[in-house]
Image 1 (cartoon, rainbow, N blue to C red):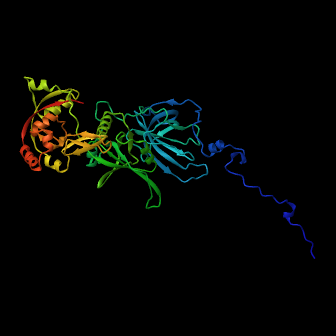
Image 2 (tube, rainbow, N blue to C red; image 1 turned 135 degrees about the vertical axis):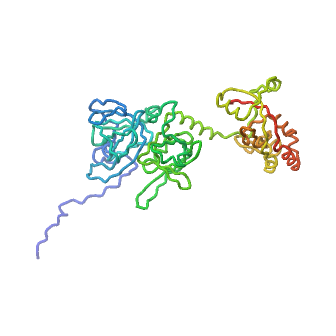
Image 3 (cartoon, helix red, strand yellow; image 1 turned 180 degrees about the horizontal axis):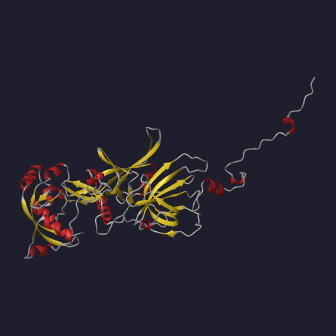
Length: 473
């Protein structure tokens, strides 16, 4: 019988299984390789905040740059952003690049920001500082627009001579806000209203449109027909003439998270346009987006948007202490105005207080309509409008009795030879309303429907003279 040789397992002692350690107690967890968590994170996800320049960088304006080698420091706003992912040729190669347009008050620069492991949180409107050792002429097919004549390519993760930093902490919202070519007191070249842009102005070269953010929809992720993952955000924008939908795609969608409704102003230069039942605006590679530009038109549009958000009082009370009615009625000099005269006076001196007379005709009355809808009298309490056909009502919020006044929308459109006043645009003094209707508020509340119908037919198309006053308050 052949001899039996021992197996290799017999030369080793069997290992005794250890009890599993509790992951909830950090003291019992053994160190893996001696590196701390901070050291591992710094290697896997490197940061650039510890970067130090090795030489002197000259801080210059973008409009003063010249192509060629030279260490320069640039400060500007991001007005265009596009992410281009590329397959890695080597393990340490670039994963893709962000194509940026950075501008200051003098010019714009095309920047290719290559990245491998770092996720650069760059947004439209961010103030960025860029250190670069070389500049070159921009290609015709690159992101070029008007003064964007130069470009630079940086890869901070592999090249210590270049660097980019987003100045979120020190950004006071003042630097590099002036649009290119803008001069105070003059119209910006190519600027048009949103209505003109939709009706054919989108074909104008270097066309610009100034809009305000109205609403921001949620971010949508979906799969395209080609099988790629995509995301988009629809932003409704408007000005004083029209509305449209601005569609953001890809990495630009995160820029909308910092925009404020009825406050953020966008100056779009060369935007894309598509008329699909509703005006659709998009950002192309040739589009500049100036966020909250420093210009007079942007200030006016923001104030216009803020006024739209202020809900009007359903029955604004008349201010007795603003106008001296007794002196105006007893004065020997009585000035007759037209609606066109009032418009001219108000535009010339909006803060000036003045009084006069108007001769107008009643073109619309809503007495019967409001009575049928139980809205003859109205007021507000707890921010809620209250309507009724009697002089008192109970607030549904605080359950307190509230005194109501005659609804000013009883009187509709008033016209003269030069203009018209819309429904509800006047603040009526209670005595003036009672003189016009020929009865007190108590008598009006107890009137029958037949009498109200007769009253409406009697006052319709009536010519009347009224004493008015204008105050900025």
